[in-house]
Length: 66
Image 1 (cartoon, rainbow, N blue to C red):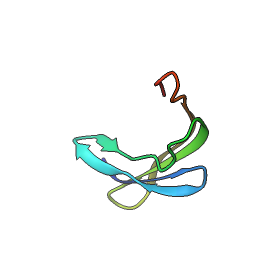
Image 2: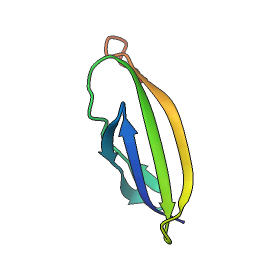
Image 3: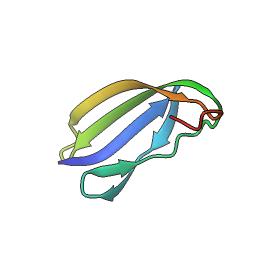
């Protein structure tokens, strides 16, 4: 089971908080249009990396979509 999630958005650390069960929420610190590289690392209860992923988040405020 995932015990902790740490992430970065364009190199800035972000804090993930467990909302319910296996769902985690995060607030992205940048609020401008553009593309952002998001890195997510999940740790299990023993402190081992249980998963790692990188993805691109695209924000378009004019079209109101992410």
